[in-house]
Image: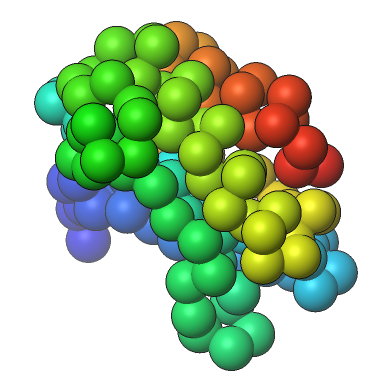
Length: 120
């Protein structure tokens, strides 16, 4: 049974997400999605199946973030999602980079979220 690169990547992503859920010990998950033009982050409660807080570069000027796909926009999104999570009483999360390399925009988002008060 031959698998394509896309199928292998999907399996790897699912395996990583299962592993994160197993070691999370009830903590919520900070999930990152990166595209060519935008970046978004969500704080997800896997036990209840709900999104507690989210932020996206699509929000643009409404949220006071720069719109686009640069490192500055990613840092602004990380800070914004952390502020929204802290307002809801969430401090400890598990970082789910979604199969993306921890570099550039993903790293900037994570660092900004840590500086804003999230622990992971």
